[in-house]
Image (cartoon, rainbow, N blue to C red):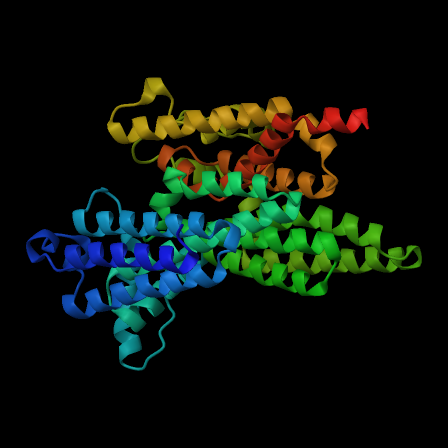
Length: 440
């Protein structure tokens, strides 16, 4: 039987051997993403192998012992997919050229000692562009370094999906099932190996939810501080998340603050909460975030996202807030479960259809058995929190997205909640927990 160290060593040797074999074949890599953007292929190959090695060490130290093998396999799988993308160029769209090209101009100034932070992109992609520039400054101007960073972000996400499920339900079997689905979920594997924001934005949302759930359990101010920090980071990487995350968390924060406090302090807490909400409102207004709750913003964004291929509901438009509410059920359904079999035109879309079909089955299973699971858990408020976080995030993104590719990326931020819910509902149903409690 393999120990942790033996398994780590074996998979590390195999993975590094594959990487060395691919990177040393000049004929193979000549037209690859790696080689096209490489100034010194020898130096880049060294850094790539070093980062992969450090990733193995990270997994060894942060992955809980009970799920070490799963997380390790998840890391290796994402590295191998990255190598396939970077060497064989198997995807038509492996990285967004916008921040890659802007980083080129910023990097030129940085190398001259001029700290140029002007990306001319707005906050929507500014800070991810600056992160990209920093990584390029350290290692070199090659998108493979950000792809490697996203593999590490994706792997850390796996660890905290497991920890979140364990914190919610105190059941290792439930946590392992949720982790397994996330580990082998195709789109999470792909976007963890690409140079795009989705791997990092998903990680930040998972960390935010995890820290808030810990605060819900013990009211430790340390977790509240981390929540504030993660709210800020979420807003910097994907600004649309700023308001969504705040709306998801605020009601539960206010409710628990009042519930857990001394009755004499309730008026003070309410006053402080009002002041805090007002302060945040002013900040969001001055920074432009509140513009994203205007009808004009919804119409403008939806129009922009009907460009490209694999469109859906492109005929739909909003003339009032009532239209948004009226169309929300069908938009949520399309957002979550497209493409449908009758819209499939190639192999890639067919694979997406299989993934969406499985997602639909998971959703139906949760819907049909949620009541039993809700009755059985002692952490009902925490369960309601993750459900509210899921629904608010999905509903908001669904109201705008009209492109299959964009929908896949945006819903990826919330799928871990669905997987955790499914794993718990499945566990409760299989073990007949409610029935056994009634007998007692």
